[in-house]
Length: 281
Image 1: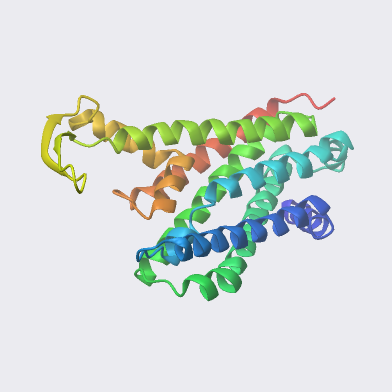
Image 2: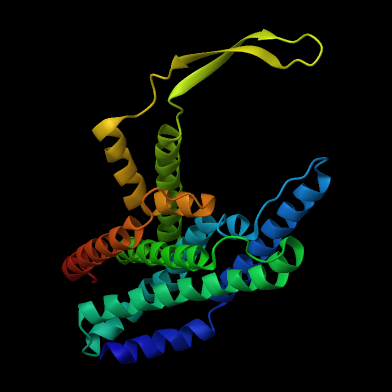
């Protein structure tokens, strides 16, 4: 039963304007990001290498925003047009309806990633060269990025399925993405605090270089169990993973797929339960 719903949703996806606009936006975001990196390097007076991989993983947060817009408009139209009620009246279960919507959103997220990957091949490589990092690491980070997209898709489906208004779903989705990004940025900043603060007490008057450096303990530096708790938070939150992926700096990157899998199933289970209780009349 759910296979028929998925086929119908994929067919709608092929003719959906919002989906194709998001696809074009994903490609243009990638092309602009690579061009900006290339132009920045050209303007520098000293040698500076900005690798393709680090630039390629930077706009993961923008992909989350595109998913929020797509899910809110694509699935919100099902509520406004009564399609959800028609599917249930035709004998489909609520679980099947929810599952098909989730699969369609994840599939759309994968296609958005492939559209961005096209920008990597067509714009990024000609301007910045090939990947200099270990290919296994790049492939693993790309896999982790797709896991994050699946979690964000599950989160948006849960939100949209509880909000019958298209505009409200889009606005709430975008606000949620920004809120998660702000929280994850705060966690990243706390974990990046240095152990020692450096203060320059004497400078060379000709070269303006520091001659004496005084180091003092940083009271904001996290240690022990507190640091481990903040690191776990950073590894579990989808946007926390996205920040670490974009920086190519994962301290405990092996945690990411498992954390994403657990979070995905928890969100999906909660979404199916809430949708089963939702009054659609």
